[in-house]
Image 1: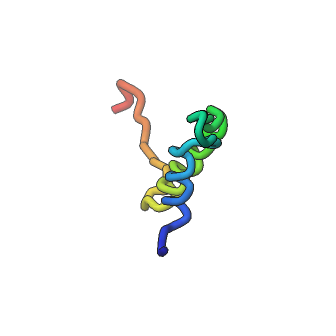
Image 2: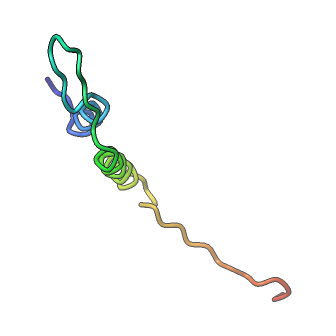
Length: 65
């Protein structure tokens, strides 16, 4: 399998944390863990962009012609 680490993290975060057999019991990942995984994946995407999340603007106050 040539699955990337990001795909594995995304898939594991979407799946259940625990699952039981015949009783059908499932437990979802804790919310802080889901948020941490989302932040990690978002930061990886942002690091790939050209601007790296930085934008420079020149601010000109009104009436400063």
